Image (tube, each protein chain N blue to C red):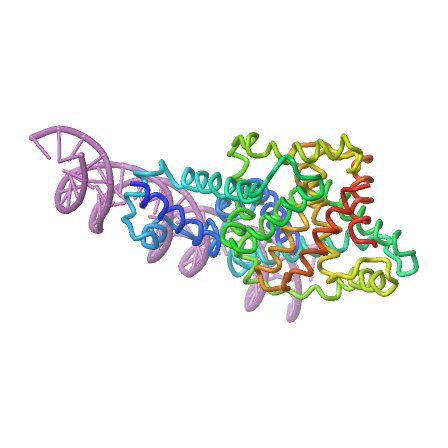
Length: 185
Length: 185
DNA sequence: AACAATTGAATGAACGTTCAATTTTAGTGT
DNA sequence: ACACTAAAATTGAACGTTCATTCAATTGTT
């Protein structure tokens, strides 16, 4: 029965995004999911595996969201903007996923996970590779182009979700343009 | 005796940067610091306060490092580059501080801390304010200018410190220029 | 001697995990 | 439809461990 498994994953996501790893015991996950403590170990070997499964699911969610409406045919800048807006819009409406993801990526836990997302990540590298070939992007390691494009977006989304500032459409557009300017010659 | 207090703070810094919050018990901090478990509570009320004190110390360290050689007299771009290189160089040679800081900022713990760094942060806002007045920067919330300038730097530093790629002088310079391009008209 | 610093064993609570017992599901024969 | 049964799902109390914190006793300092 997949229902119970996803219920556990969803509870874990929202609990950890609000309370952190260290402050969400298995017993609380069980109670919030409406299941018994023991059954979690029927679906996941232990807490670590539960967190890793959730991490993979969240990571895939981000990548799939970015790839929505993606087409290899579109011109470079339009494809860039597609990725960028997809990412920011998805993040803005999935705060728990953002907080969980950031928390996990910045914890030593992540060092034990060596997942392979090469298939999902291919379109990004294709985009950056093409921009480099065409001489549109500054000659840089693709990872650097990636971070110049998306790191400010993530940072601003987190500020918005924490209530520090409001990200309206005008700000979003300015940011997207600024990121494009950062990576183009 | 300040020696013991700073020894505790330093051990905590390196332990947490390598093992994470949840995996560094007070007993291990004590052993690593060469003190008894009890004495920690002579210098800090509890674990939370110890972490918050460390966080403040680390945060101040970053800000002071960025302000090295700072002068209100320098032209805008030179001041920007001063901040930027100060930040990146300091980060590159203080990996434990980077990892601790990132871990802490992305955990729910940070929500309980409301520190006031307005004094230390003033020069940054002055820089962005001046650039906006002079029409050199794109018209944006100063926080957005800040994130466009430093979020990619942080992300690339973390990748370097994790061994994913190497940040040499050429890459550093390209990144700094790209960030400048992101925020200028 | 008075006070501060320090020790480390003891305490009690919290937590991850286990497992014997119970309930539910699915399959088979009548 | 029904009865029966074996397997799978589920429960929750119990276990053993780990951990933050305490404190009576000891050591160091002024």
